[in-house]
Amino acid sequence: MTARPILVTGSHRSGTTWVGEMLSRSGEVVSIHEPFNPELPASWLASPPRRWFHFVDDGDPTFADDLRRVCSLRPAVGPMLGRARSPRAVARVGAELARAVEGRLRGRRALLKDPIAFFSAEWIDAELDANVLVLVRHPAAFAGSLQRLGWSFDFTNLTSQPALMDGPAAPFADELHRAVDDPGDIVDQAVLLWRLFATVANDDYQRHQGWEVRRYEDLAADPVGQVPELGRDLGLRWSDAATDAVRELTSASLGADVADGDKGGVARDSRAAMWTWVHRLSDEDVRRIRTGTEDVAGHFYADEDWDPPPE
Image (tube, rainbow, N blue to C red; front, side, top):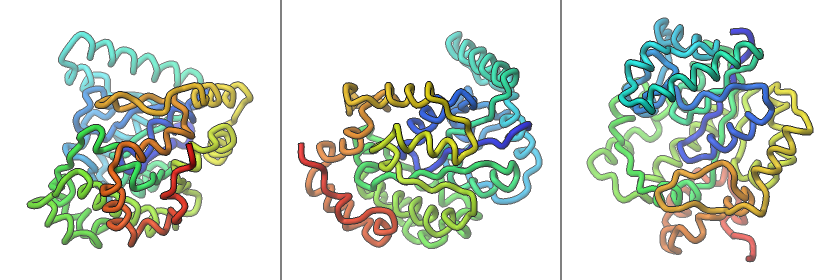
């Protein structure tokens, strides 16, 4: 690797895609989409993890070398083609290879946009000396996004990992094991997941010197001011053209919400999009989320963060 990679992580639906795309407007990075995703055929890794939120905490030289090649902008083209099951997928591999080659020629840095690497962030930093950005999103917004998409969670992805359950997830081990047999509805799942992710971000990740732990809402509320500052904190040079691109992608003239089932794009009115949970969730759902997360949420959100601005 010729330059430090950047890891943008957080829980799923925490704004990592949006922030990664905003940082990409610097023109100094190649954004690599979710290499830890076990269901992504175009993962740049030769051997992606087989479970969601895989926890790497020790010296796995094979995996480390694989990830180092990714951060050197050298995707595993052979395995990627082997996982491609359609002409469209093959074309996607070709496009990824072209981006990697262009990035190497232009001396760009790797930006890993990957919430699924959340629990492995410390290992990635130790192995690759990464610039790490951890995003936290409002618990109601997180739950509202999961509910809109109908995304239920299989907690065996976590409980089947002894090192994770004895490590970062240890304070929640009993709750996570119970959730395997009785996961509840999506709101119940969101409450438990949010508490887990936010606790790790607060208790473990904020202590790392040089790491950035940011609220998604602070970036979304003032993208033209905050995104360039964040980019510079991550070692990116930032031009007026990059700022103009962020302004265009977050204009108030753009819509705030997306259709049901759509994961959402990056060109949105980010200030209004912060509050979409208000109409996605019932008053009872909001009460359940606020009560269920109150033991952790205060580390990141005050009472006023639960009150939407007047329309």
